[in-house]
Image: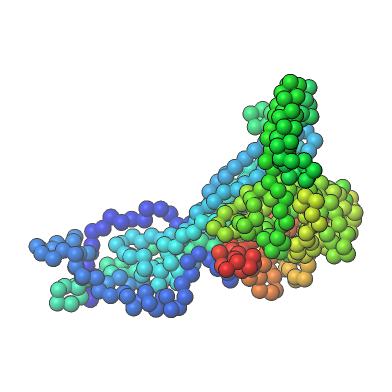
Length: 210
Length: 311
């Protein structure tokens, strides 16, 4: 098998979730989990991609236009991490005596995500990691925080993900179905599984509390 | 300004529909009576509001389903417990049903009822046939001891109160008051996930002596909970601190209390307000309440519809 060096510029456009520490991730229904049947079906559909460029001389740089297959190789790292969404809302309690309440209620979208540093397709990543890497959903979340007198309440959030880092390979063929080279890459996929709201108080300031 | 508000309040009047006045008057006579009332009210300078307040329909109990908490709420005897309930509502129920709520009380396993001091309903998520809402209630201070809250009772208009199960929430009211040797920074308030996994809080030692964190007191009814403690340099939990979980005076660290429940937790809802247990140099043990936190799985549309008996 020849090693074909391809020019590509598909560097990861976004970083994977920050490495957090979530030791008890386990059962449940994280977003987009595929059944064995769905994985088999997707694997079956993994066939040779015909070349998109049918005439003219193809340079080495354009090798991606040759017939090719995408191959998910292995997962070399797993961890649970998150994106911190920062402060979602805040409000001051002007009262000197009574507790106040800060309400948060909003529809939040969340989605699985993925990235790879060579040209690749999401379905092959999905079969490799066991969930649809393009799945998304949204839910309405609402909660109330108690804010002590003369304090400002803040509510923040984190989206947590089961994250995998993996290796992939593209195999390229000529029109006679001979393997002419392979391209190796790596990437990450993240499966949303939890939203973590957190709150905190700060002291009142003249602008935040009347 | 105050005077005007009072006048306005006193003068608000309904223009009565004929049915309200009973069968003794004929419709044209009622119209005449309304005109006379309207004339005198205008003369008196009052604002007239024609209220078409929705009728208090009989609330179908099946239209509301409270998600049942497994709960542990730690309080001191002088505190007013604050609880939040998530409930599903069939959209056949008029969205302004809350306007008809006269009173709410929470009932314990011995049938004792605790009248809610004040309450609020958050709007919540809306689907085609149902909505998910949050009801927050503030109870009066409750005497020391363990109280198991099992039901919520709501009276609508003049109708007989309706009761719904709210699960099993242990209200653990302890003698004394918060020692407040620690201040709280960022802390978990709601976790939308299929399991109760951890509670995280930033703590600062404002005492003059070193404080050793011993763990959490959280006694969820019917559950065996092991709690382990980890300490991090900040709330982002990227850097763990090895060694004993302790705080020097003026030191701040983040503590992650990991819950290890023995049983399967699929589709269970948890609400906690734990005590953090700590010791000072002399070995004296303190308990301080932390913030309220809910743990709820993400409900699929099918699960929500099943709970409301919707097709």
